[in-house]
Length: 230
Figure: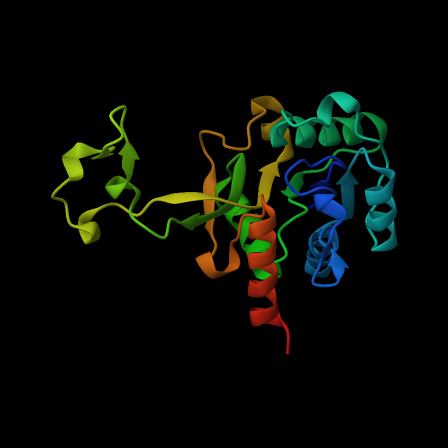
């Protein structure tokens, strides 16, 4: 079995400037992803896809490879994960070697644990699916969600569940934003991580935190100190 980890980490970020190289509890945040990928012993190579010399230097210092510079057309605010992941895998196939499995690991997931990376690969192999990726449950039943209508009044989005008890509603999940395992040959054909045969790797909510704003960042640092600092 051969597997490669791809960590997307562009230099630009508007809401949190320098996000992927910013210090998180004393270390550049990307180094947490590099470290867990290396400690897992699942990967033949750990590669960072970036357009930034600064991030490239950090990545190489902490043991990752940066064998190519991500092109500008894949480094703006509108670039999606699939495009970056596919570019990296295609580059490796054309310039180096192909891998049987690949895992896209986000640069901003300091709560990622080795056991869930391993569970993701085990799931992918067992189910023979195109992809398997991290998800977690919503903290509140989404079918009880409200919206503000055109008259500035509150109304339920799903009116049919007005009188449904919360415990009778189905459990619903969202992308945990940590990792995405793929079977490379199928993925290069389908070109979608969220494929029609994707399998879940369920992560506890206590290990999941989106980091999109400064407020998110500060909250995540508090979470990390609480859980991991002596």
